[in-house]
Amino acid sequence: DIYTQNTFENNGAGVAVMFSKFITMKNNTFRKNWGTAAYGMLLKEINDAEIIGNTFEENTIGINIEGSNRIRYTNNDFIGNGWAIRVIGACYTNSFRGNNFLYNSFDISYNSKLNDNVFEGNFWSGYTGYDLDKDGIGDVPYRPVKLFSYVVNRTPETIVLLRSLFMDIIDFSERVSPVFTPDNLKDAQPLMKIRS
Image (tube, rainbow, N blue to C red; front, top):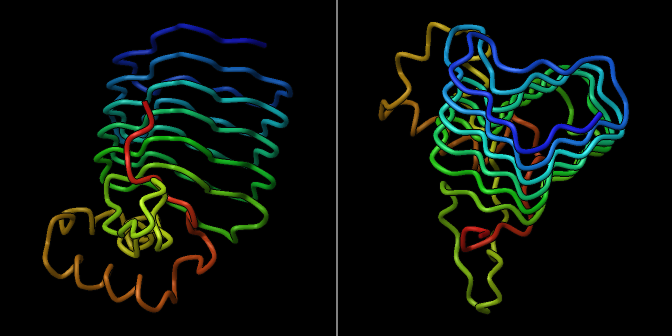
């Protein structure tokens, strides 16, 4: 199945793609799909797929991923979502490369082990590292999973504390010494400039 150049906007739930293989989704726009159970795109039991050049903007959840394997997420833009990517359940051998994560409340939500998934060479608007050798790649890895996203997944009512100083403090302490979030879930080569 191939989905190209579509716009999925103002839906109650978004687009659900389930129990399929060899899906290609290119240059689509998923926008303003808001609600308590809404997402731009839901992937459940998808294998061997490509998600390339899509825009996920102002959705409750940009992509909700469950039990999906061997998917390439490349050159996508995640802009102003509640959660850019939410991974639930076992997912293996997925790669997230060359994506822009811009001003999402949570870039990544992850409730299992990293397995052999790869996050590499993405731009993160929340990245505060530096580039001393001026090669365009941050010298310090970026950890996109916040402790607060872990807390909200377990107790949704805590979302009211989203912009509080207390949450900033516990997120900082978790970055320094990860206890609850996957220690090895990091982008070792974060981009310093937005991929255009």
